[in-house]
Structures are given as structure tokens and as C-alpha cells.
Length: 223
Image 1: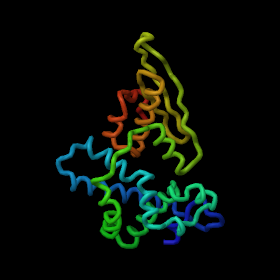
Image 2 (image 1 turned 90 degrees about the horizontal axis):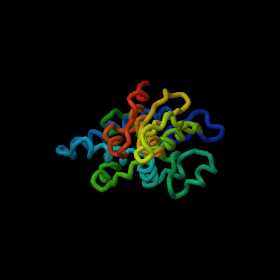
Image 3 (image 1 turned 180 degrees about the vertical axis):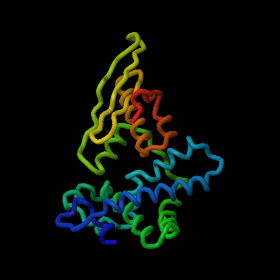
Image 4 (image 1 turned 180 degrees about the horizontal axis):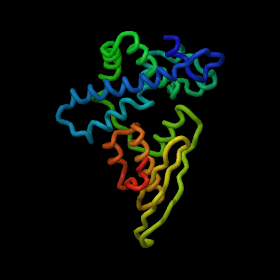
């Protein structure tokens, strides 16, 4: 439990919750996906996926961390906690996921399921999937583990002036590049970010299809 509540920013901490957070994120995803599958038997994937993403994102996890009154229990950098006071923040979301992993390790999947359902099931009908913002979601996901910034580069611009087609490549250090196309530079960047999030398992594929009229480039999607 102590490890689950120790953020990587904590000064002089012998260990932190990053490994538990990694495991807890997967356990949370499995339990929430199973819950939605059972609760909405007639809903298509395109309806379930945005609800799933809204339930497991950092914002919801942070809200649950506040509900669980974890703010004063998590060991983290004092400045980080001060900036996030009252609004949660990624450090609190990380702690919630790590706590789920600790329950799973100690009590197995059924104990973890009971824990998750206690806090997430009441939200399953009321949660409103936030508008998809692939570039922001990508930056938020990267920021959980590093200070790397994604780079977007225009590869080419085709078509007439009144109907251009942009191809943009997205580069994130440590990951294979990927490309997207769209009718504007922004749309192409969002397509590339969407494709990246789907490829890395951050987004469900159905969510990317709802992010706009842009699409990933088949050439750039290859890892």
C-alpha cells in the first residue's frame, strides 16, 4: 500500500508506484470493459468505446482519487500537490491505478473487480464522453512518464487551393513515426495523433473514427 501511494516525484523515496500504475491501468481497463459489455448488451462498439475512454481517463481517475480522499495520503512532490490541490492531477490518477494493482496483487481479480465496480459502476450511466482531442490526449499520455513533446512535420500538400490535402508525420522519441492526412494542417495532425493513440492502445479504434473527417495515412501507420 505504501508503494502504491508513492509517486515518482517523491523526494528520497526508495521506490515508487510506476510499476503498480502500469499493472493497475490494465486491470482497470479490463474490469471497465467487461462492465460496459455486460451493462450495454445492445450497444455497438462505437457507442461503448467513447464511454470506456471517458471512464478510464486521468480526469475520472483523479476525481475518484479525490472521492477516496487520497490527496493527503499520496507521497509526492509538495509543489506538484499544491498545484493540483482540489483538482486532482495525474499524480492522483496514477495513485488510483496503482491502488487497483495493489488490490489485484493481494486479492486477485475478483477483489480488484469489486474495488473498481464500487467507484466506477455508478459513473457508467452518467459519464459523458468528452469531445475527442487527439493532440491533447497524446500530450497528456506522454506527460505521464516524460517531458518529451511530439513533433508534427508537414510531409506534403496536394490538391487544388480550394480543396488541399495535407500529409503530416508525427514523431515521438522512442516510438515509430506515423502519418495522417486531412483537409487542413490541423486535421492531418489530429489524424496522425489519433492513429498513434490507437496503435499504442491508448484509444479504442472506434474512438479514432469519431475524431473527425481526417484519416491516418496507410503508409505512415506501419510500425
